[in-house]
Structure formats: C-alpha cells, structure tokens
Figure (tube, helix red, strand yellow):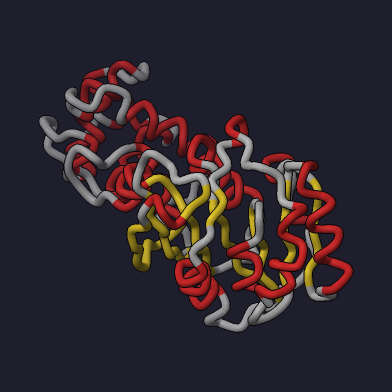
Length: 279
C-alpha cells in the first residue's frame, strides 16, 4: 500500500505548526498500532487525523478505513488516494464536532497520531460520544500518556481517574522524535487501550469529570479539604469518608477509582448529610 502513498507524496503540504502537526513516518510504529486495532476483526477502523498517511496506509493493509481530517490543505492528496483505494473514506471535519451518527454503522476500532495540544480532548470526546468501538491505539506526548496511565503518586490526576473509569490501559511503548517529520521536541508514547464494557462509575461523564477536577484541584491538599472547597460541609464529608472507608487525611491520588465513585455517589445521595446525625 505504501507505494500508492509514494506516488502522490508530492501533494502533501508542509506540517502546520498551528495544528500541532508532526507527521509520523516510521512504518514499524504504524504497523504496530495497526496490528493492535485490527486484532478483534472490526468492520473498519476510525482514524482520527490521518495527516500524511503513514498510519493510514498501515491500517489500509488490513481492511477498510474511515478517516476524519480537519486540514483542507490535504484534500488534493487524499482525493487522489481515494480514487485508487476504494476501502478508504475520508470525512472532512473537525472530529470534536462529530458524534457516532456521523460515521458509518458497524463495529469499529479507533486509532490516531493525535496533536499533542488537544490529544486528551480528542480521546475524552471519543469516549463521551462514540460507544461502538472497543480498542484504540493513540500517539500522545509521553508526559500526557504517563498521566493517563498513573495508578498512584504525583502523576495521578483527574485525567487518570476519568480515563481509567471508562478504559483499561493494555500496554504502551515510547516513540522517539526521529519517527516524525518534523521531529517534536518531546518524546512520544503510544497507548493501547480497551474500552470497558461497564464503566467503573455510573454517572454522567461530564459531571464525573467536573467532580474529579475538584478532587484534584489542589493536589497537596487532602481529599477532605478539596471537597470542602467544592461546597460540601466538613461534617458531611467526614461522615461520607467514614462510610466509604477513606481516611480523612487521604489525598485524591491515594484513593481508587471505585472508592472515589462511592464517595461521589454518597455525596450526591438525597439526605445523606442528614443521615449523619442518626448513624
């Protein structure tokens, strides 16, 4: 498939700094990502941001692709490619404006070499608005990938907990700058993720996201103090933490996803604070 890309590579524009474009050029990395998202035989792969196509052509070697691209400068390149590759569909749109009804029906997985400045925004939009996929392979800035994977310690954040509520981080690998054109100034990392069939917390994703941002707003403070800053009374928080089995001195980074969900559920329960006076 890559010979078709070579045929039309003169139509590829220079990467645009404003879009955070660093075009992947390492076929080995691309094929490793493709192998993962094709492993459970989906109907097609939804690729977010095909760019200059190195990942796209690795995906196309195995089956149909629906690619979403925002950069109209790439239209001459992709229009030439689609004339020769019938199992490629390109949707010209900002992925952040799309929902599942905007893509073909069927079982699909997802992949993308994501712009570092909005990589997490893209993944959260995917989780909130697209439900049929099960596997994803995403290129991110290494530091961001580490925060997503973090199970404990200083790197654990609201992002870590939110992502781990809906996905399992299966594995990952680091990618050096020379794999891109132009080379970024930071290291990159590919995350292989699996969407959980049942989220670890059954709450509206936007509400859960806002709650977690409050829990981790001041990471040096205890969970109790951060919850106080969110407007809950100290007596009620202490009561809820006791019921959830959480020490009042605990910080958010020390509490599991399931326990934080339990704390949120209790705090959201009608009359829970009144119940503290009748333990």
